[in-house]
Amino acid sequence: MCPMRFLLVFFSAILAGYLAWRTTVGSSADVDDSGKVVAKGKQDSSFKMTQMMKNGFWVFVDMASGRSPYRPHHWHLFGGGKADTKDALQSASLFLKKGEKIELSKLSTFIKLHSLSQRELKTRELKMSTVGNSTNIFWQESPIGKLERQKLLNQKGCVVWITGLSGSGKSTLACSLSRELFTRGKLSYVLDGDNLRHGLNKDLGFKAEDRTENIRRVGEVAKLFADAGLISIASLISPYRKDRDACRAMLPDCNFIEVFMNMPLALCEERDPKGLYKLARAGKIKGFTGIDDPYEPPLNCELEINQKGGVCPTPSDMAGEVVTYLEEKGYLQD
Image (cartoon, rainbow, N blue to C red):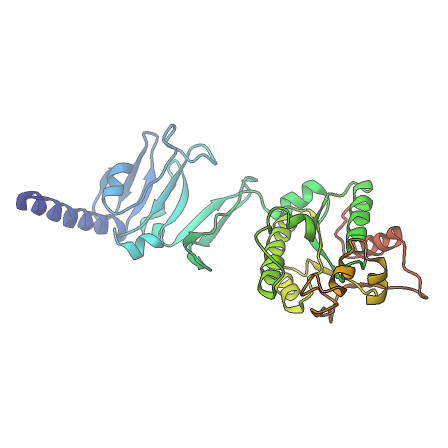
């Protein structure tokens, strides 16, 4: 870049910063019908949106109409304040009606999200996050919330986590429960451990660290289903207590319902529906839960299903016990 061009760009940047400062301190903004943001204060000036961007403000609008796609006649502004990286990372958006005034200094602090019900504006601070190996990420709010989805479905979203030894009846209960809920007009979805290893978790084995990651992924998926308003039924051995507790911690408002299939190992091994115990006893499967890998029973589960007088309850009876709990806790709203 030639020296003269460099000096021109340099002094233009200084001038832009000065104008941004003059229009921010003690100023307000109006939105008029022509698509301009009129700044008023110590220095009366009229800035088009593209000019505001040059003065250190990020401005994003629907290019076709110049308006927010959520609501007509509302401008969608992202204000970064000074054109500084740290300040820009704290940028925020506001919905402005035509003629509505807002302090320009607030553009760099808060975000107003307009709900689809148009009953209120929620003010939240926009924060950048680093989660695991993901950096520079922001949480995107949805205009439809969990309460609206639950009202639509006439039920409360939750996770029914069925845990126990292989052969204890987890899948049997999950399918029976799903069928019972369906007959009552309630929407559920079964997350079966083996089924998920055909797709989502097909890259995982059965080492302790793989088991932990397997449970974490299922917990995250179950949480999304519950947030959607569904009754998510997770059926997995999930042998380690800390992994189940980690999934419980993902759910707010005590919406994690742990169901322990407390069946004796001898009974599960006698059933052996998949022939896995026989292979484990023969040494052909290593790290099999209950044989050469531990199962840690829950300490404070919501429901425990076991034999009564040496007799196993029927699938219908087991499902009925869970449904009764869901009814008592208000998950099956009517």
